Length: 123
Image 1 (cartoon, rainbow, N blue to C red):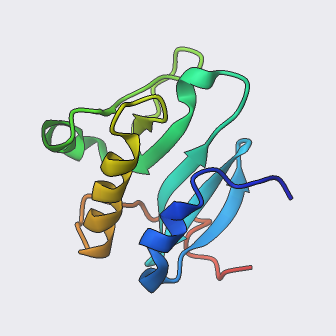
Image 2: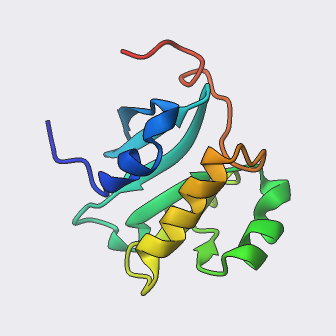
């Protein structure tokens, strides 16, 4: 198995018993019956490296106001509507990811999305 990037995210979310599933050459982090994050660090399309945050588009403006480094992004010109990204190149990357993890731990309703994969049991 390849090394999972930003493994310290699991320490932050430990009390939620998170689990991971490989997806799109990255790793989805699931907790509380939702996908919460995608962790990505690859040598291709490096502008997409970092932590992707699952949320609803209606919360984007609020979240960006709270954490300006959190931004929408596009993949081959398509903007994934339910995701924002913290770039791994951001100067305060780890601090921002820790803030997101704290929001998840506190049950912030803006964090996470229920998907068909997230309702399945852990493997």
